[in-house]
Length: 79
Image (cartoon, rainbow, N blue to C red; front, side):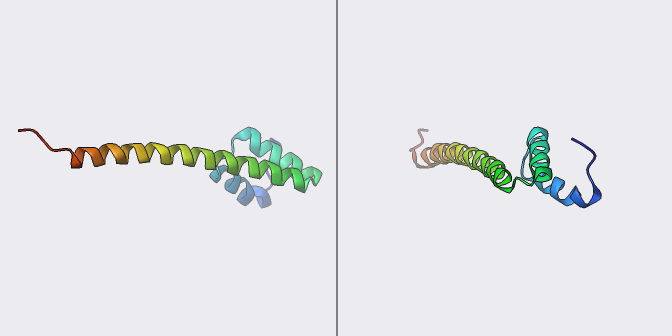
């Protein structure tokens, strides 16, 4: 990526905090420079979708662990 302007630092930080990799950040700034707002929106929506898919995958893992914990608590123990 070209040198980041001081005024772009909050945006850069926000993109990184949102989990964007270097390639996505670079693409976002290129689109921004070109004034392609719709493409910026698509790129951010794609990142959001990826994060949401990861969230759902992790939620399923948590649900599985909760089920295992529940079965351990409710299964009669033998002496």
